[in-house]
Length: 318
Ligand SMILES: Nc1ncnc2c1ncn2[C@@H]1O[C@H](COP(=O)(O)OP(=O)(O)O)[C@@H](O)[C@H]1O
Ligand SMILES: [Mg+2]
Image (cartoon, rainbow, N blue to C red):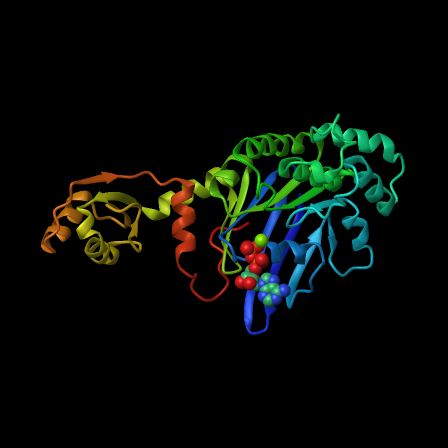
């Protein structure tokens, strides 16, 4: 069952379409990553899903209820969210922040739940300190505690590790990965591929407001790699790099410089010798041509390097 289901979702700001006929499902019991570069439309999609901004078209369903229906608030009560950094009262303690929010939510048995969520996010023992004394990581964990207060079935986190140090990111990821076992489905957004690859079992890659690929993370990687055919890393003299890009681009996907001397190109069927032949025809003699297995990183960069063609942009279903 899909906990969150989006169909044909569209949002425009002025003449710009920032979310474009978007469709995806977040299956129950998963950690779903909405992956895309900055400006791809992730935050807008999350705002649309929560009913914070109004769509131009399309539907959102959370826990079987449709956005706009009379009982939609019942579903929203089972959603915890953290968007663009938590709104915290910095002069109050962590615990007091939770108490204020619990009252706002009208929670019964708030004291016990507050103790639980403090424990879950690892803030037990620090809850009486003022938030202004908290580190960024602690604030982010408090934000997560606030989102967890209503004991949600769906937790929506917008770029949850922004601003965290590497240790904080690992810790946060470990925490999130355990949520499905406790009955919480997670949807998070990120522009960082490594984060999504490590934290999420399902992924939707969006760009220019469109879904370019979605599904179980392993399947997305596999199908992208299959679709890509052969892929090569071509190492040339740095002076030849611009010219190598020109020569290699017509032979496959747009060639991309990986560093100052290496070009990556995914060719349909051409092999390394064919690449060498084309390059030497242009007076370029590569140091090395290596076969390259695509990682999700490559897929992500390739899929988000150029605007998608017009029309509903869903490759492989949600
Ligand atoms: N309130 C707004 N008014 C006008 N443009 C907006 C507004 N919110 C977002 N946008 C634009 O929509 C696009 C998608 O933004 P956003 O959803 O924040 O992307 P992401 O979260 O993936 O970085 C961006 O180009 C952004 O400038
Ligand atoms: Mg954003």
